[in-house]
Length: 466
Ligand code: AMP
Ligand code: ZN
Image 1 (cartoon, rainbow, N blue to C red):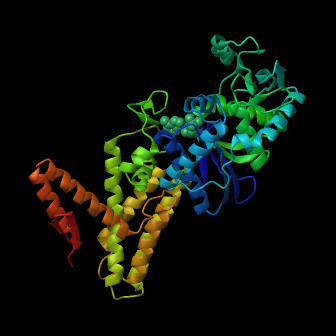
Image 2 (image 1 turned 180 degrees about the horizontal axis):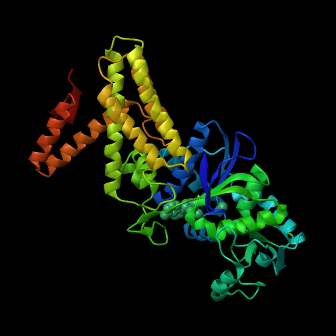
Image 3 (image 1 turned 90 degrees about the horizontal axis):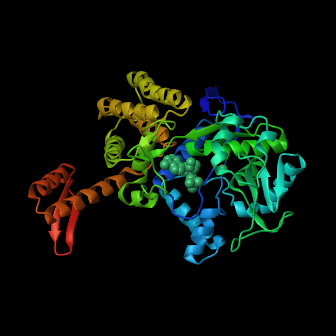
């Protein structure tokens, strides 16, 4: 298996440090609000990568943190008149609702930064002791020039960074590129006791500390959105490698942005949709198919059109699954005959193709194409003359290959009912708008599916005719 390592800027063979066990740390959300579907892309991407690693036989220890103390948290808690802890509790709960809604598997551990304050203080002390950090009047800074390899992840050198950072000069720091790892309490801010007085941790040290504490000195994969390469991950490397003298992560992975009109979806640009809003309109499987239809290192534009086309693609998958399930009830022949045994190699060949694509830096776009090719294949060549055995083989394989991506995992019955409900609602809307042509067209469409409608005083009812 190969994956692209941001650190070396190359696709590399994936060889975990500890055999079949993978320690993976993904930077999680700051829990001051609902997450938007741009954050959702990153969560879905790394959920898929984790599930695919598991599919390939790895045991994945998956840690994704919650940043529950920072400027944004403090500001929002003050606005709402609640404590930062209460705000964190609330939006962690909301995070789980939306992440579960997107069929994101729960992490092995979701640590909260504020639960690691003692360890963070110890981390800061170690850095001071080793000469990488200095305290000035209650604030502690990391001294970038002490870490020789500063800039290696983002491919920048310290001089360029210094030139770029001059505008943001802070008199207390020795150098403009030094960054805070412990922040002195400002009036009204939550704070913890420390050897440097009351204060709170900086953002970067939280992740260094939690990754170290929960997964060890050198982890296999450290991941996050593309915007985290600099400064967040660059600073994490400086802190962690400064402390241990060992590589912090073997592989660094970054997923590209979800854009709106070619601009990053973000809270600050106010061009975002919350995951929750999008989930009200589209099924999680549709959203996942849309997100994974592009490679994770390629930017993707959020558009209704693309979501609709994902929906149509997913319908094709469920139609095939539904047909196969019906055939399974209908056909008599149990076992494959010799001709079918030969043919089954074609079916199994899709698994090989899928693995080949996904093993190549998690190329979900091509992996999805393989599933669509397989759907086309079974629609053409599996029929009433097929055996139960080959039908089951095809059915299980479509579900198996869809699993890491999170598509084709629902019962076809539920999916069909949803589709009918949706068409019935669409027809109601058309009638309200006096669009009789569309309303008749939908009625015919439903009839073709074996569904008839009854207009009753309580509204429209539908039933199946056999
Ligand atoms: P935040 O809560 O802003 O720290 O973001 C949580 C995660 O979402 C980080 O890994 C970010 O890199 C990622 N992220 C933020 N905006 C986007 C976007 N528009 N597209 C993809 N990932 C994003
Ligand atoms: Zn982080």
